[in-house]
Length: 427
Image 1: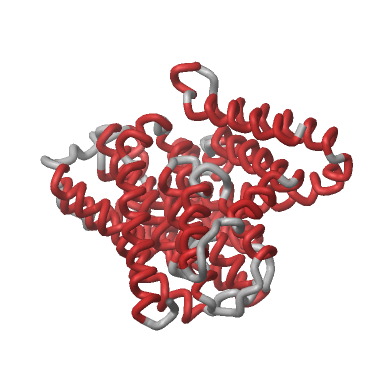
Image 2 (image 1 turned 180 degrees about the horizontal axis):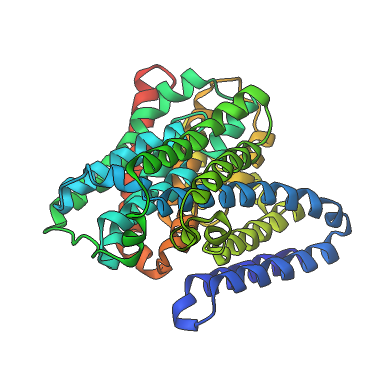
């Protein structure tokens, strides 16, 4: 049964990757995969049943965080708040826009987190780029930039948050040691694309939605934009002050925005405010993407509960190399694996296996590799899954067009980190 679960996971992964040729929705595959793996897991290890609710609670935190962030972004978008930003970006040249989007995402991700930033940036891209395939390219760079930006910040990615809370890294140390590597992982793909990407993007045509936005005054747009961005920025502050899960801060911010927009709606004629109602906006939330999150994370958690991931970590520790080369190689492999398996259980397993002191080079490198390695495949990170769902990006398209760029950037960042630590006297 132990091996059979791995085989089933691989088969399910193939069906997710081949969603379009097989004509089976990836959300349905992920949910079925989770159900089958947990049935097999409980038969193999009866006590796994005791961990099911705990894992569901952890996944639910991510789902409610995602739902809150998506709703806030949709509210701001419905009021035309993002037009205040996109109207300031006048360039249509692809290379110029590429650099602007990449660096906005990179630094925004460090302040917010990679998942929230990705959702916000996709909303902006929809205002800037009309052609779907052009937007997919920029969405791919958003994934790379969001994961790179989240890796060097203690609050930018769930794995860095885990290491920070567990006192494996300090906030200043993680920034000092991983910033250059994270920047390299973004710069390499952007530079390569700058030489191959030609022409201009086509702005979206004026839609009925923009006509509806005309019913909203500039002051109302600005108010909703400030409240929405403020709600998102408040989340890491809320977590730092209260030590409570981030989704509570996200839902609290959504509640405030809901109340304020409710008063704004009442001031308008009924025919002008139906599309501005949060009740209507909630009906537009991408539920299939949320269910895909649920399925894929629960599937991976079944492998974590039944010991497959622990066995993988133990096998990595047997690599016949000396320190620090051995642990550099282990981290590089963990990063690549995080594009296939969720990085959270991989990092959790590493935290249990190794007893390095706080701010040891191993922990900082783990934050970088686990954070940026997920960009290699589109379903390898929370940001990637969110963007995939919002833009309906095909797994195979991403594999052909973006994955090799992500891998180049990832390896470049690894090289920068190793050279940096070697010069600082670690090796």
